[in-house]
Image (cartoon, rainbow over all chains, first blue to last red; front, side, top):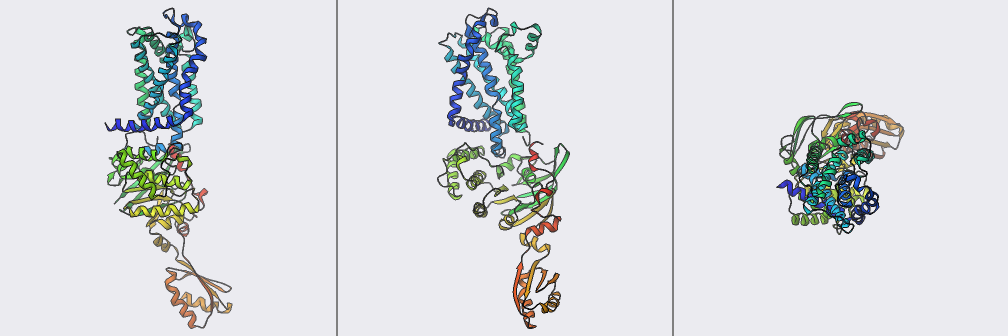
Length: 254
Length: 330
């Protein structure tokens, strides 16, 4: 119970700090819309190829990719905020309190997850007038997947930030991980149009399976093997991400 | 005992191999004391303090802090201590009052009590009207006092202050000293690090001098200074030719050392120079010798440090075997 209370205190502080920054709020709200309007039209003609004819609606294919991308990129760079906090001595001040180390991380991750889910919902609402139609159950489950994915990447980002403690080290490292993950996920362009070796390579990326899973959920194939694999991978990633994050926060001098 | 540490050792891995930043520190701090940890940058002050505050684990050794065992009950230690780090403890963009209340709540203090206590501390620490201000709008001295309020908000019995006045202007320093002295009236025990001699001298009941990760001297500021070489006394004579006579009188004094003369000045060192002076002046007067002036210089802690380590405390660059910041990457 104490851990939950402490998590709430940390979450509340983070949320208040984020909301106090008007620039942050505007960016947070506009980002999903930018994806939708500036990126969506590029993918529309490729709908049939990406879904292999399974989709009845272009946005059933496009929106799942976008919210997975949002879950990944929205959370991936949160470590920069942690470095700023570290510089100001806030992390040290937190660590000298009796609060659980888990709560210090969980409260921050929770803020990131809430932001991502709100962004995703905005994205979905904005896509409705453009013709998105998807079953409620699948959409809700997809939001759970985005939340888990966000928690994973936020925890990992915080871990790396705490270990490196430097923006200069964090930026190239995160970009180095984000680029291949994005390219191999099949979010931007369908992997099917690539050569076989590239398709095999993308099979290794858990993210590709997550994207496929969310696409299946948006089509309403909740019990399909694609959505099961997507769920399996995202749960596994979350367990790994949170474990690594919690260990780093617990570790001395982190 | 508020702090009882035995054989604390901390080794850091660096690119040049392992460095022992703290090499077996024993220390005792009694309830209600203000104890200062004095030493040059890199001597191991901050590392020792961070170990005692549960922020880093000792490589070996043991300690009881605020009644709890450091290794077995770090959470108990955290409950009993307040730690004011060198780097600050608030986010520049955050509202000062919010930071204080959130910090208190992590100690389990209820929100309303945290807010009431915090605002009272703001008054006490000369921060009136700053409760709703962004931290970055505060001056250096105000920011430092805010850090102290953060460290005090859960009413700890032991307070760690890491270099409390570094980077402050002289006026803000003097003001902060007043506040630190005031903490003792609250019944708190204070353990602070400093590399300023005047600060240790002005604030501390007892001083531990640390160099290269070892405690090289400890005692009250008075005590430490007396251990050294005594006070320097200089007698200026009206007539040069009387110097040999004065030398002779001085040499007969019990404990006078380094007796020297230079033209019309006779100088020497002696313990408690102020108390031997009246008798000495009478003897000189009895010989019909006229003095132009008398000076007594108390030894400074810099003299202490020089005697203990052979190096001047101000000589910081040659004194640093390890950058204490390196512990961050260890």
